[in-house]
Image 1 (cartoon, one colour):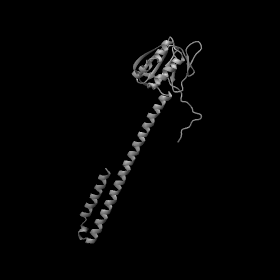
Image 2: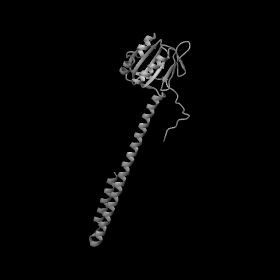
Image 3: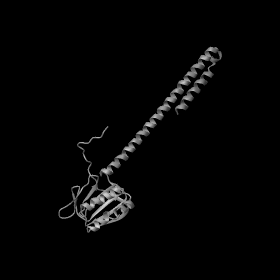
Image 4: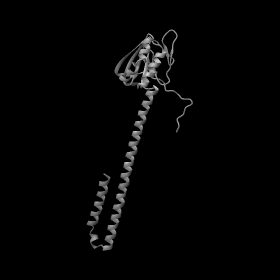
Length: 216
């Protein structure tokens, strides 16, 4: 639109000059001066057009850059939220049932799953308590039965929901001398169901750090 407007202005100005009867009697040196002025105006307008085009490209680039930065920040925030346990997660994985096992068996299972690509986990007790498992999670045998997971008392049997590569995690748990074999030797059992969709709904409150600060 800007180019069309500027072109229209130049055409009108040239036609106006051509239509001016006074130009027929204008001296040659005056005509040269008028032509020079028109060429200078044309150059100035073309320079303005180039500046405006550069400004437009820069603005478009900056807008696109900001949008890309915001999208990347949101993605990173979601990923960190899943790792920290502050947001709900869903995806393919395993629904694991652990029966007649203790805290050490649960810990071994969680560690094996992490090593096999487990990304998001939730431990459910038979007493309708659920705990979102994160890197700092701990497990202790509770007096009278069950376990203490991150300060929450859970009674067995336990259901461990994990999002990740189901076949890889299942194989890792069933290696000779691994989690399944160890639980069986202790009188317990570990069974697994592969699921196309596992929903981890338990969440944790974001931790308020007292000492750690990011390095700028």
